[in-house]
Structure formats: structure tokens, C-alpha cells
Length: 317
Image (cartoon, rainbow, N blue to C red):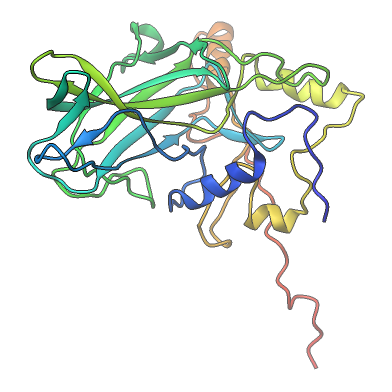
């Protein structure tokens, strides 16, 4: 079956992205993935001569869904990023190579940022307090982390060694939306989330970036779901999918940035999310009370039907 190419060039080669997101981490969750780790500086073990490879493992939770084959979210909705990192071995002392020579590492930290894909232009992320919209907003600050953590693949609970440390950034929002969302004659803009691993030196007390990894490209919508539904209905030009696949292939092997290892009988594909924040605002404005649907319990869910059993049409004799 021939695959059609998107009308807008994608920030990353399609075949490379599919391979990376399916094989890099074995996870059962269906969410945007992160690409392999890129080393920025040499991390040395206690002998000051042995290099240690670094691997950052991360996952994104909540808020994202597939639209036209691309991971998408709404700017007003919250999402969460969790990250850990691992090394070749775990001595008690680490050094980072600098222009002044090996420097003792006092601690490690993981930071989160965002930027435009294939660009150095930064995109602001905001983090809400537990009070959410009623509380102040902050820029996500780097979080201290201990090497050797592990993200549980089966659920959102982190079941691992008690000495692990997981950097979790909760209640995140993009400050702005991507450009040209849904426009057929303009290039679609993409954002990426970037995780940076820092080594804090003891003598100079400075943060040295030693590794990083970034997410697959993301589309951030700035308007309500109804706007994009109306745009799709009134559009005169057909939408060119990233890859043309039949329902059964999409059910078992979602593409292009989708990895789900659950058994087919238990797998549910992402639904078009209910804009619960806007509904809460409208409900409060009209009736004076909040009765919006919970973001974890959308009013409607639309899943692809499971493919028919191969023996369903075989006549019994």
C-alpha cells in the first residue's frame, strides 16, 4: 500500500521518528514520546577518566491526542512531564569535564523548556500551583534528581527502587499556540518540549548541561474544539493524511508518533478531548455554579472499533 506524503514538510524524517518512538522505550502508555538522549558534556566516574553514557527516560501524561496523525493539545489544558536518567554505573562521586578540568559534581538537576521545532526560538511554559487558575504562575524550575530512576510502564505510579528520584513537572501549559493550525496553504508550526540534565559543580556552583532529549513535534491549538470541528466540515480541500492506512492497521500500529504495547482487546485510542475548562467557565457564567465535566471523565468518547476476528466469517459445518 502506497503511503502519501504530507503537504507540509515535517520537522523530522518520518521513518526515523517511527523507529525511534517505537523502540526507544517499552511503554504501554499512549502519549507523545521523547527522542534518544544527546550528550552535551563528558561525565566522568570517580577515577576521573572513565566516561559514563547518559540516558534520559521521559514521558508525557494527559492533555494530548492524535489529530490528522499528529500529537495535539489545547493551550488551556494541563499536561505533565516526568523524567529520570540512568548511567553506566553508580559510584558515590562524579566529575564533569570542563575547560578548567574535571569538576566535582555536587548534584544533578533536570530542567524542562520548550521551543519551536527546528529553531532556537524559545516558547514559554507556565506551571500552575495546586490552586490552578486562581494561583500564581511560574516558569518550570530545574528539579534535583538522583541517577538510577525508572518510570513504570504500566501506569502513572512510579514503582521503582526506593533510592530513585523522579523529576515531575505538573499542571503545565503552553503560553502560546502553534501557528497555522488547520490551514491548508500555510506551513504548520510545531513545538517540542526539551528536557535538560544539569550537573551542579561544588567549587563554582554553576549548572553545566551534560545531556538533553526532546519530544516529538507537537501541535498546540489556541481555540476551542468546536472551532476546529467547524473548520474541518467547511473546508473545501481534502485533508492529506500523514500516512494512508486502513482501520485495522491503525488500530494495531498507530502512526506516525504512537507507541502502544497493550493487548488489542484492552487498547483504546485517544479521544478528542472535552474542553472542560471552557465548559466550566460557560457554566459558571450562565448559572452561577460549576457543573463542568471532569477532565478525566469526558462526556463523549470516540474509539476506533476493534478489527473483526479473522475467523468471524468462516461458516461452521
